[in-house]
Length: 288
Ligand SMILES: [Zn+2]
Image (cartoon, rainbow, N blue to C red):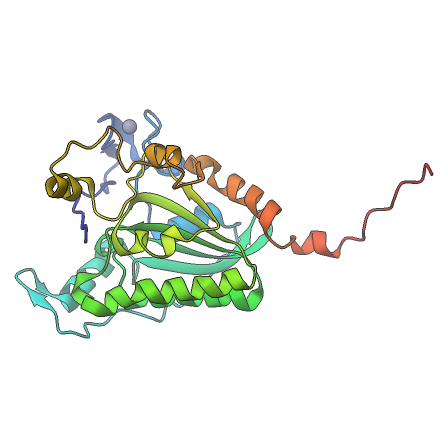
């Protein structure tokens, strides 16, 4: 499974250097721009709670499944320390308890359930609790008969949880099948990077699949593929724009337009907003 290690994107300081164009930016200006570089439009990584706030209507966010936290079932240990120690460090660094945050809320007035992944927590890797929180989000959408939206960003399976991590691929796919049978829309939003077991399960199962610009999306990363098949890969391989051309994703959406575009999709696909559902049917023509 691919696993990425990169420098933290946003340092705590007043100024930050854009990892794409290299320009110094006022951190507050970048954050106010939804963590998109004002100079080059590079989409920086954002954490789960920030995603929820970017998508859901203000004051509507009701997070749940927070009480579920990962445990070191296998007693995993390597030269970097125990899995338990790593989890404690990740909690402190990322400010969340797992690599996905889930919430009920409204998006442009549409009742929805959203799960937003977080690359800053152990590379957005999928362990038992990530799988369970996503399953609970899907169950919540099923129970309330509302659409499910998942923002997927991940380096792959959580290797410290072994086969238990891989089982989450089947589990998340099964709960989505139930939504599909019930005719409830599922929108997948893929953010950089979206790889490994996540890309091979729930991230690939959207009724509509959106992606942020220039996101790396694929199962194995380009370096692994290049080293395996010993062939030069085409320019832009596995990036959103390349995958749009190949028909793997339906639309590339700039972060500033994401809420509006998802709202538009829900107008087409989703149940009506509660206010609209209560309105009386419009009067028929009177000219006959
Ligand atoms: Zn930039």
